Length: 195
Image (cartoon, rainbow, N blue to C red; front, side, top):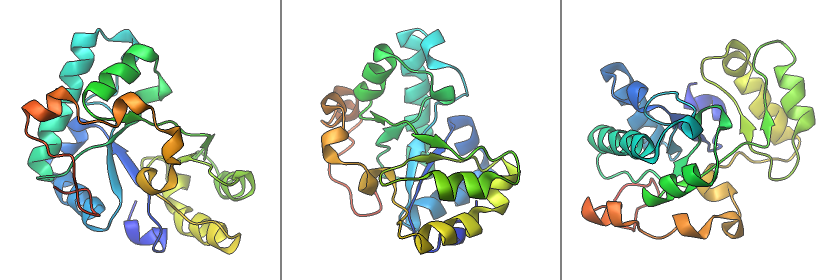
């Protein structure tokens, strides 16, 4: 989705590592960060994480973190949205080892038909996290209209790092993890998430 459709609002783009490593997407990833949005992890592949061993989960986080560091040097990925929303305590713990807060949605846009706009604009409430997909026709083609409708209704578009209440964070994912220390990933980042 062109970020200009967000009308100055911010959002979080959860991407897969195999998408991120494609050369055609590298410029998009940097534009997301440069424009002040959040780049989040959606796994390296689109696997249901509860079907993976801890070693396989760790491998996906390691590959994603490595590719993200190559594509957007100095950027610290802080959020993970599991594919299919498939998570349990082991998934949350593994994400936390990599310094990532597991994030979920509270409402899906649908994105499959013309009712997407109405579903979102009439269905949100304060603090709603809307799941949309850049691969769904109506999510993309109704994005500007949805943003306008939300702003006119008095809402603001926030990314995960500005829209979440700090009290909602899982405390085990907020500290710098041992894996990040090993990779010399500093804890402090600028407003764009870059170190």
